[in-house]
Length: 280
Length: 346
Image (cartoon, each protein chain N blue to C red):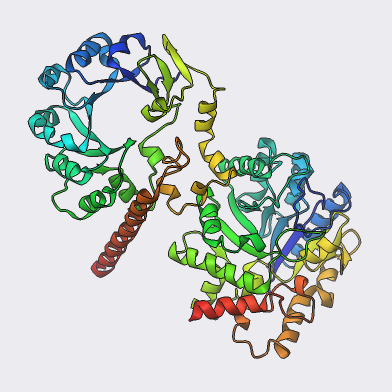
């Protein structure tokens, strides 16, 4: 495996995984600290399931370490009790797409903590558009809300950034190891029971596995199969990410969001261009 | 006055494809060394005497890549004969038999020139004789030539099943990453075709569908004939105007068959009708001075004096494809064009 592959592992088995770059996951501070003791410099980031009650135990970890907190919108207020983490680490919140999303995003961003919408946990997308409008129009929002931010900036620059780039499932770059030491490319694929390898020292991948080839040939498969994604007007903002696990996934709320992002980016580009013309 | 000459070389009329609506009568063999040498010598002599003329060589077929890399390496050698002149090479290929070695050779020959290609994303009219899936082989070839830096233009044949899918078709080609899209209405296939035919009103309807998608997308993907029409609408003195020019039907066109026979139009060559010389025995200059070398402009003059005289859309249509409609007749798509132009200009 290339040294640049980042492997996401449960903290409890981190020591069993021979990889140069690890992201360690857990819901318990003690487990994270213990794993860090074992694997040290190989840790490239930490993923916590919620703010642990004993989060202060993490204070001994190196500063500037990227720390991602997985949160449901209803738990967003917990960010206020843990603002010290934003001072100490490179902190962001990975927020489930569910009821209360707008309020959750508003709370977290008001604490100046960036939000990443967790597209591996989409339960209710009905507030997606309100959240986008908050990100686009509310002056109090001063930190990025992903994927909105990168998609918008990409459109503004004429170089769209897709969900597949923002939530990579490229086995050459990112691997995900589950508790049973099976290997796949992301948590949602693990949940769908789709794997292409296992850990035996390092991550052993089977490049002939169906999932592996599906991931490698993802784009080609969309275009040769006549899939709806191939003719979607927002393809460049998605690259078929949303329907990779479930081809029947209802993209409608996302499509509306993508079209809004494109329209607003165009509007801003035009405003900037007119302002430039006026200055000249 | 300096001329722009479209030099279409068809080194073979054979093809690995078996597309239902192909209009090429697949006959004959492959262009031999004497013919390709005579073609380049003839072109070199002509350009020596007419150094200001510009030539675009379009490699066409059949499927030109069936000739293989060694043929095109020979062509690269012959290219030295005309390298001092303004000659650009482009190619039309289904890309399904592209190999890395051939792509490398073509890189050298086509330089900045592009490759035109075709695929049909929503119907299975395009097939390969081998039984392999056309879309997959096409996509692999497409990725290969893109990785070598070629510009790839899509030529999409509009048929009965295309109608209603204009928006999807536009976005498919934009998403797949081609550099341009050219729309051609399905005309008379060379063999029996049992698929959905296109009639003139449907052509107009389809143009309108795809035009709306193009407009909504701020013309991000260049689509012909819309780009040419838009260009003309903004600059009526533009030397480029009309649908035939939008399809790069330049005059004079020198379409060279594998035997060296020359036709004034690619489509006449495809059906083997109306040869105006042979490059093995005739000089290019002699061929170009034959009156029927300029048959398209003669046809336009005739139409403008006749049934198209009072048409307000003449500048945009120019009578349509001459070969498809016949010398004295206006385009068979007239009603569709009218529907389209009127709807867009409302």
